[in-house]
Length: 636
Image 1: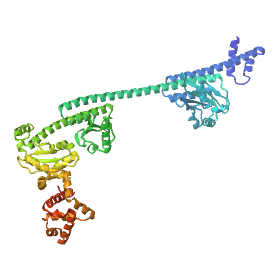
Image 2: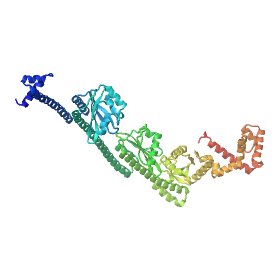
Image 3: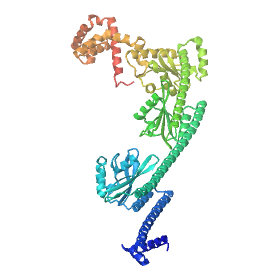
Image 4: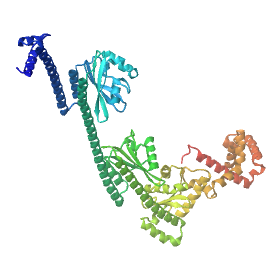
């Protein structure tokens, strides 16, 4: 038998025999002894060791190939990593095997998968930067082992790590890096609960398994990045689709707004266009928060009763020139002010809709607000031109120049007004900057054959008392509400062909009331004819007249708490008769005579002379009239 064949046969016998005398028994069975037997025994032991190594290597390669197949079929990262750690645990034969993942942002290592552990503390271990054997592996990017961890470099120890290691009873450790190029993905560990020196073959095997783990983590990271990229792409596509839809809506709205302006339909087409394109309720309000036009009904409650928060958003839109989103309990979601320079015409209000408004939608709303402001300017221009035409006609009508009568009638007929039918007049005393607005507020409440304009510092309405009966107080209240200022309204008696004379009487009455500092009243000229016919002055002159005439009596009463002014009024009304004055005041005549003596001291001895008493009589009556008009309970 050849030597190799003998060694193989002996090895086969050794594999089949168990016990310390297996080799000797086998050689004796073959009849060999001496030097030849010794040589064959050594060769048999070497063959057996090599056979064991090759079988172990075959087992390792088989495990690595299995791991590679699992990588190729990667679906669940956690499951593959758990299987890989379990396989490393079986192949390395250690007590504990675990994988720690490296966080490049915090430079911490977190235990992700374990095999053979018994404590929950170890399974959730976090290794701070620069601590433990794991940090050395990360820093050096090379395998590191320690026979006794308790004796490892003291500066590398951490209380949390030491407690977790002690809880598992670990003594020796081997850690190999999981690398992807120059980046560290984590560390794969095997540990024993007794002192142990790891062989190079074991380090190489664990390194091979760590490479597989690196592939798993890198593949998982790549898949995660691909999913994130896919999500970002999908979101970008959704944003692009939404942007295109917004642009399409914006183009549609722009075309329809242009048509609305050209057609001259006012604010309603603007509201309807926005409501249709944006799928929500739209209201356009004026500067007084009154709804001018609406679409997409029903209106949100907040559009009918605007809250302070909405007013603040409108103010912000007025300052910035942009649409302002808002969350209002009343249902308003966005506002855009209607402005042109310093002029404020109101706002566009938008309610809830089918989709969330985007940036292009906000620009569309701003464009609609600009169109609304242009419409308001257009209406202002038309109203201004009409106001000028009517004011010129009112002026020519009340100037009453016979040579221009035919021209006035012709111009009036052009706007549908018959001059001969105008027999009544209503005069309003309004601050100068509000007269145009007051005239516009009056117009809608009279028929279209009336004239309303400015004349000699007043707003005047000339109308037919037959076609348009007028309640002066109602008109005054409407105008005051429109301009948010006190308004004085004066109405003279209606009579055909007497409008110029009626205006003079009404103007004098208005001036008299203004001199008496009355500015919020509706009245007829008949009540003041005795005074307005005599007095046609201003407030300063009339106040000076009252002060110079009876001011001393007022001062006397104020200083002493008396009522000499009441006695003086009664004396004037009763034709300067002390007796009749006493009866009117229910006093004894001597009491009145004593008061008249005090008046002599206050006004002077000549106050009962004809001229002085006439002036005092006018002053007393005007002063009494003013007090009655200023009294809150006095009816208009």
